[in-house]
Length: 155
Image (cartoon, rainbow, N blue to C red; front, side, top):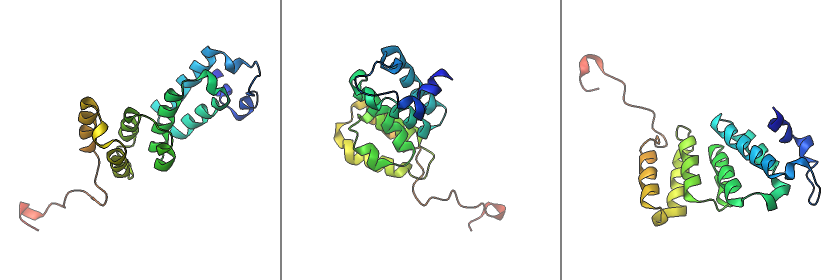
């Protein structure tokens, strides 16, 4: 509850560069990052973005790679691929985003984006993970197996 309060819009107004607010303390920054991760784990990607937005004025105190990765996962989950592409997050973040969005209709778009973006630059373990995730993605337009026919014969 305390961390939720720090991620609220009213708390964000305290965050001015050069101010000595509580949020500039590294433990509070770590707490807000934990809140963002927890929101992802709870299936709340939009709320994850809110928590990350709370850190916007504290860029000097936060590892940009960490926030870019978390933001990328949330954006991919929300089908905001163009926004995610501009963040420069590593392949692992894109794979995490694909994994979170695996059952959603835009998962094939994420697969295509990963191929275009990372192609032959995936490590062996990333490639193996990508292939495993790719097999779980339902192709666009697939409506399921054909309906069974009476007596097991052809339709």
